[in-house]
Image (cartoon, rainbow, N blue to C red; front, side, top):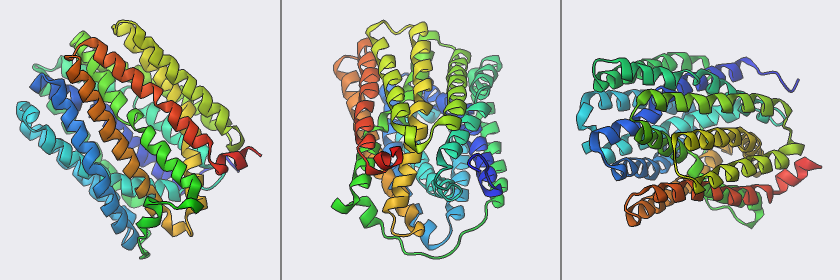
Length: 402
């Protein structure tokens, strides 16, 4: 049956949910934490630039190790490094704003190692015809467990005797969740068959891999939506309200909208209907960008966040299924899936770094005023047009519509 998952898929789904809970508890608050301790938007930007620059190098290295050994080693090491990162934040405390590049480099290594393992077994537990359903469940379940997490974090921070104590409590809880995920990762079956790591063909696709060329271009153009949106929106909400509880509530509201839409889309989208769902996802995101003609108030931010959250699964679920199907078509055999998953991260990282530098340049030349932030958000939304164009030009999408 299309809408049934085996034990491996459910185990992977559980681990995705735990990871999402940990991330929802603290990811948006790390940027706020750095801004509080530095009072400098560009400091937060340098932290993210470093993450995006470092990640692909270690993703490729971890991808190689996953091929010649076992992707679970990398996944577990990624969980350990997440714990190390939050332990480092706990130890630095108020001095964290002094080390944006070092902290960004540590998280970049962590992301590269973790996602090389996680993306591989997420691919392994899916099959053609069920990918949209599994991806939708990942988005819906991850969103569901994330609904209360940001709000809970905001409440903990605001109710603590001092904000720093609240942040320490949140980071300590997250550290514990990563330890639990490490224990549960032993439910995922091992895959320690040694295979060659042929990255060149996936990283530099030839004319015979036109579909993969297009997906690589789509990856670069999609970069603004991955991580940049959440940290900018969370920081803007804190700047407007000065209240972590409002930041947490804002993130929870976006998660609620995303999980409802993801649950619905996952059950009805098919390879034949990918294009219209991606189009409506694009249209909703452009509508969000158009809100930037107004002054950025808390109400405008809420409306923007809701539209962005609705757009995410509308576009992301069919796009994710399409990407996996293109990999299945281009890989000469299933064992090469890690090369393509690793290669996909490179243009994504390049796009992120370019987008961050554009954002920093706009912010600098417009003296850090509100207009700069409004232009930044509109540009990130508008670039989705390119992602749609590249993705819908693939032969895999056209063949699926037949």
